[in-house]
Length: 308
Image 1 (spheres, helix red, strand yellow):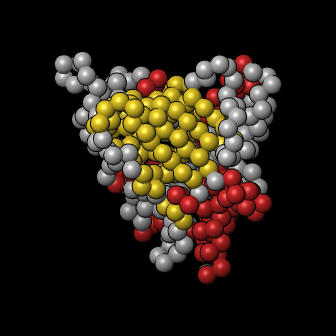
Image 2: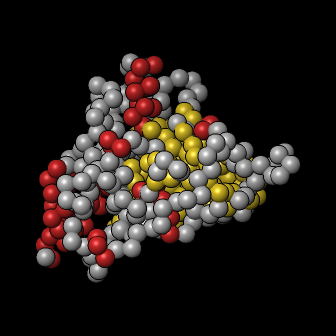
């Protein structure tokens, strides 16, 4: 996020967040819980609206980079952020977990100062809840905002589309699926003309089945760096809107006998927009959904600034 936008957001909102009730931090983390990141994969990256595969190799596939196991349910306040712009404690992935109060899939030096509350303190993880998906694989897109009562909010479903197709199991008890997330190229073009480039570095799926849920995370800076290393002629440029596709299964959720995977209860999908990250590779940082997130920030802040 740009420093200009940060200063506007901090000036406009710092006094407001003292009245907001944040989600309760997660306490059901299972230390040593066993999960396999390969249960969720990324198998395709195409430019939005196009059909040319951009991942290298004959059968490209990336497993999630890491996963975390939790007991209980994740579909209460944890996945219903109040403002949903990534502030500390606003939603599941913006809290901490475990005895060490660890951050979800990021390091402390990746925290941001999104609201300038406390003043000049970077304590915001930056995770934005994109959508919830029920047992029938119907998508319920979240929104960002309103930042103030009566203020502007923006439906994430107007900016991107998601689809989930069951390939094993029956409706309401799916055990394996394919997924696809695609941004609207026209929206990206319009927003980039106003706000310029932005960044997006993580995509996370929260999968609920049986008596717990597991978070699977993709780190796109690592994925794009690997592509550049393996395929020097890769056309991935990290500023183009992409269509992402992959697979997901519930083989981490076995029945008590350990011989049958359980059906999906629901899913939640999160994305993280970093603040001026340090590049890990000598290329422009990736921007699959980051421009969308900055658009949301920009529209909300502009509305508030004009009103007040």
